[in-house]
Length: 351
Ligand SMILES: Cc1ncc(C[n+]2csc(CCOP(=O)(O)OP(=O)(O)O)c2C)c(N)n1
Ligand code: SF4
Ligand SMILES: [Mg+2]
Image 1 (spheres, helix red, strand yellow):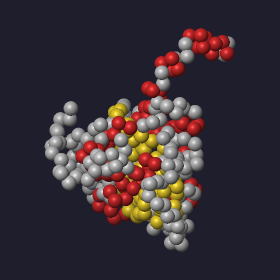
Image 2 (tube, rainbow, N blue to C red; image 1 turned 135 degrees about the vertical axis):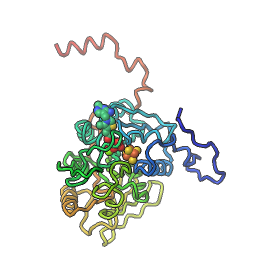
Image 3 (cartoon, rainbow, N blue to C red; image 1 turned 90 degrees about the horizontal axis):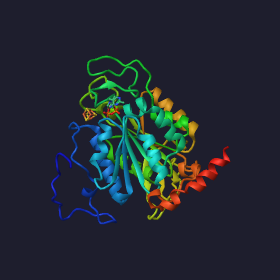
Image 4 (cartoon, protein in one colour; image 1 turned 90 degrees about the vertical axis):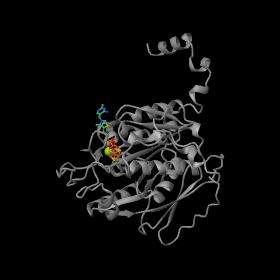
């Protein structure tokens, strides 16, 4: 039971989605994070995206590791499945769950410490396996839960609350993903829900591993002058590289590519993501060009946001490993267990 309960009263004019559910049905327990923490704004964007997509709560599995960010799944869709794993171990847990049941939508929420420090190796392999899931990194440049130590995403020169400067090079999850063959890469800002909601919806429609790196300031330990992950710094240095417009499959799809550099990418479920306001030659499916574009902007101190790279062609975990189409929970025991005779025969093959 949540420690602080939300009032059960529902406004009579609350809007309902295709399933007849209100936004309230996609909320979770009351947040215990610090007031103003970016992670709560990400939660609000997740609630909105899942409600707009009419995701059935019992078809959702929320995964996380350890950290303030990893507490996020408690704050949305109470009626969903959930697994709060050990620090940095969410990717292998999600990989196993995927292999056993591909009928669920998996949303993982992690932190920069959870994903880029202790969990980095696991994250790399989930990227390579193209696990079919949405993987959100709530990136604040510090270990918030353990009181603000620099994390692996802290920029060179960024200052701690006590004034000490970080000297180690940061790990950028987007650049990391590009180098490992990631198939969906986006960066958002917790302070920009208008951009984050369509990015989340596109990630849900993606057929493989969708990474969303969200700059999500820690107001308690990393929101001061000199920090490169503060609200002010992010607002001042951010450029929206792509205006992302998600068009669901049920809507009439008009995909004219305008000379202004607008590009449309069709996702596996027939939905379309339209990229606009991008540089004229921006191609979201050209891995090398996207890497160059991001590196140039990073060198100039700009934080590039938007849906940055998509590849809908690479096979996902299920196609690569030929996992069962049905959830193992729905396969009868007689089929799951081949019996001693067949196991003996199998062992004979390896003698
Ligand atoms: C094996 C293990 N090592 C260390 C810790 C201590 N610890 C808990 S959360 C955390 C870092 C969390 O940072 P991040 O993932 O960035 O989340 P944030 O709190 O910043 O949202 C650490 C080091 C732990 N819980 N387990
Ligand atoms: S310590 Fe930082 S990351 Fe953790 S809840 Fe507070 S503001 Fe958020
Ligand atoms: Mg963090």
